Every structure is written in structure tokens, then in C-alpha cells.
Length: 271
Image 1 (cartoon, one colour):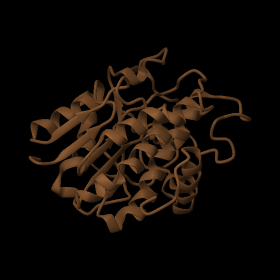
Image 2 (cartoon, one colour):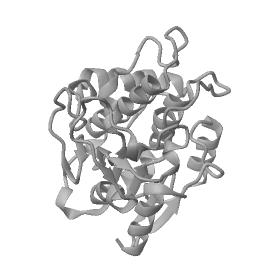
Image 3 (cartoon, one colour):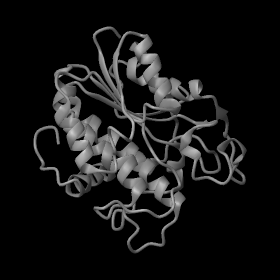
Image 4 (cartoon, helix red, strand yellow):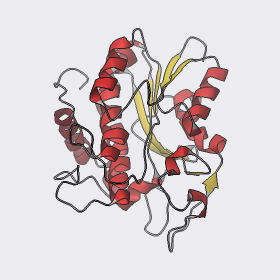
């Protein structure tokens, strides 16, 4: 990875820190962001980060996220999980598009979750202004949005030689993501669910690292991975696989256009 430049959001702890560590150990020049230098829920913070970047970018790992938060809105009125997990990363990736294109073979890695199988994007109410707020429904929506972003970005950015893939890291023991949960993730097991396993941080980062750096996935784009391989379609009752609605190209295009409006980003080349 010598000579490659990478950005890993949420790189201060958990699987983000491990992803950044492995890429750096392989020789990459890694910028690992934390909330104090890149607040994804704050459009102005994202803009500042983008404006400060110069030169090509070979790897962007959209890793940072929040989960099952109490109902919280940003100053712009956005629901916090959708704003952080999807919109902030959407704005960041669009802002860094030219840097990614300049790398001629860049990779964007989008950390989603098996939690996406619990719900689609509420296109008519992404901020839960009219629907009763449910922290898990909001989380599921944001994680479905992550996958839909990868589907649409892969299509739009293929001419720029930018590969975009999403992934499920698995249930990880002992990270800050579970700070809003009364029950730690390693002891939480949805009734009737199968295919649930708890991973170490190193195991959880493995699929992110594969998609960011491995020649084994050269040319692969627009896919959803888990356990270092392309995931099968989700089967009801099994907490594995990818939901069909999360790979739907029409919904992916619809979310892209909605997101452009929400971040006030003008349409244009690459967007």
C-alpha cells in the first residue's frame, strides 16, 4: 500500500481504528478521523474537511456511525442516525469525488450492518417527523441507506474507475457503537434469529480491509459483503445476507436524488 492515501472515518476506536492500523502497517498514508475533526452530523464540518483535502485519494472507508440513539435532531432538523450514518458520508464522498477520481482506481468502502434487514428507507419521512420515532427503525433505515448509496455510487462512478462496496462487519464485542444499549451486543440475540455470531474487533475489521486493499476484489463494485465474501440474499429468520430492497437500483437512484436535496449539493459530473 506504499504511496496510497486513505481516509477512515471513525478511526479513533473500534473497527475503524483497527482498519486504519492495518492499512498503515501495509504502508498506506492514513488519515483516521474522529468527531472532533470531522463531525458527520454537521455539514459545515464536512465541508471544512473536504476543502482542506488536496491531491488524490485512493481509499475512503465510511466507517463512523451511531446506533439506536435516543431521538435527537441536528440543528438542520435531520434525524441524527440518518444524518450521521448516511448523509454525512454521502456529503463527504461527493466532496472527495474528484480526489478519488484522480487516484484512477480508488475504492470506497461503506460500513453498513445486518440491521438493515429490519427496515427500508422511509422516503416520505426520513427524519421521523410524522412516524413515531423508534431508535432501531431509524438505525435500520440509515444502514439500508448505506447499501443503496454503494449501489448508486458504483454505477455513477464506474467511468471514474472508483469501486464502491458496502459490508456488514458483524456483531463486534466491546466497541463504542453499543454505548446507547442497555444490553451489550454480545448478549443480545433476537428471538428466533439464526446466523448470529460475535466477533473481535480484528475480525470485524477484516472485511473492511479486504475491500479497501485486497487484489482479490479488484474490479468488484456495487456489492454487499459479509465475512469477506459477497453476501447471499437475505432469508427471513436468519440474521445474515442482504435484503432485496437494499440492492434495488430504482430505490438507490431515488435516495441519491433525495440526498442531493438534503445536503444542498448541486447536481453535476459525478453527482
